[in-house]
Image (cartoon, rainbow over all chains, first blue to last red):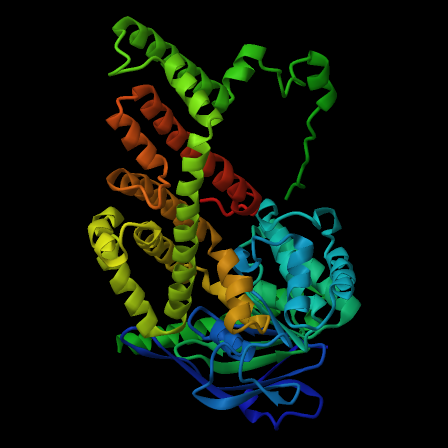
Length: 274
Length: 288
């Protein structure tokens, strides 16, 4: 089967079983002198167990969009619903994995870090939380480093802890904001493989932000392509899995996505000049 | 096109030549001992002590410059007769009172400052105004307001501790990374639990720096204040002990008092604070 590119505008309204529903969301933020529109009227929906990637060049508002789903930002217009509930503030039903390594409180060991949200939200007692944390730390293969403090871990290990922490909460959706962007190329590939393996085991729902086309194709089953300044939906790529078994097809898909994003950049450029 | 070729290194040849294998070598005993900082510093102190003893013996003028052995004798005598421990206790009691109240006030001010804009402005204005003002300069005023007693000293101490601790804690809070704040929000922490579980540990390096600076200010201020006036209800502190013995021309006792001040200062700065540091920010890898 061939991966298909659909213009999202032609889409019918979200079907039942939708987990995350983003409905014509416009996001604006203020700098000291400007009101910046990050995204304009963006709509998409994420189903249960989707590996949904937001892909676009810098300035397309993909990270801002993810933060809005996380509840860190209120849309100027439009609505975001997760599992039927409107998003009003950050919450542990939407666990974030950030790009920055300092997302792990340095004063807690690996085990304590994974237990932290379980205890802080009052979700579990210490005993239960420890059991759950150990299970997920084992899943990300960090049992050896379970009592280490974050500063002694490598970048890849830190991101694994963050993933284990997110998964241990068993959230409705895991929100990953370029989690592997600060890693070296070899580690990044390894982490992508491990993430897919984890997904195979637990089928969690994840929304993943990246600016790497190759990473998007590798991770996702669906990709939302965003164009920059302001961020608008350009297209949605579905059934990406179909392109994965065949390297030539993956390369073709990569080129097609690249052309789609790149042509926009040229247009923008000439527009600015004209 | 030709194929990619792998040429594997012949590891057995390297092993046979015997050139490899020595990754580590034991250092000599003397070199190893000399590498310990404490050993070098002790050596410096010993050299200075010997120089002191020799010079004072040569000078032979105990009124101006007593020998080290005289000083130690005085220290021993005044410790055994209970004078020095008593004075020490008086000083430390006042110091801890002032330090505790100052720190609590600093905590209240900083929590107000992170929660409200007017609180921030208040803290910034007050620290800008009072931080450059040496606390000891408030002593004459304090004596008029609170009289000749511990209350005046405590007032001056609070002033010396409060601004340093508040300023550093506030700086620490504001420089907690955006990511950690978002993590805290993600854990649904808000209000006081957020401050306790995220902000305070994340800002702990700055807080500890503030506490150290506050301690140093307080200690120096208190000894100075006790030199100006020290007796309250017949119980003077260490500063007063130094002043009193100078008036009586018991110079070895003056030196003994100074030595006690140094020892307490060193103990708090190098034992207490370093232990806290080792068990917290050093262990967490947060030491700058």
